[in-house]
Image 1 (tube, rainbow, N blue to C red):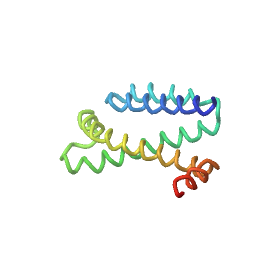
Image 2: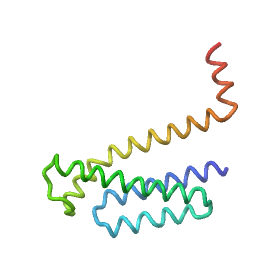
Image 3: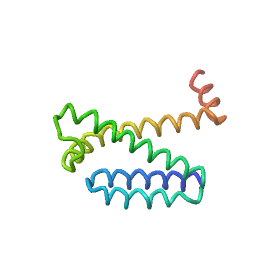
Image 4: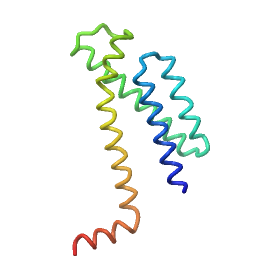
Length: 124
């Protein structure tokens, strides 16, 4: 039951962050990210990983914005250019999230004894 609640909290966090990325206004970004982080305050470990995830997400978007500003010949740090770059970065962000969640699930499966049983069944 706790794993389902954790999964729902992470899903809600990702949905709120992605909605805030679609909206180009910084005010909406902070209003959407902080409630998702506050949802995770019950578990300190999840709050720490959520803060690290938010910082990593910010750095990822900033680096992709700075890298793409030369390619698209856009004036840096304007609202329209941020919206254009973030719309291009959302697809890469979804791929990054899907890969990271798949790796997380794979590692949790490897740690469990079920992985050994499944490996033996597949091999024979």
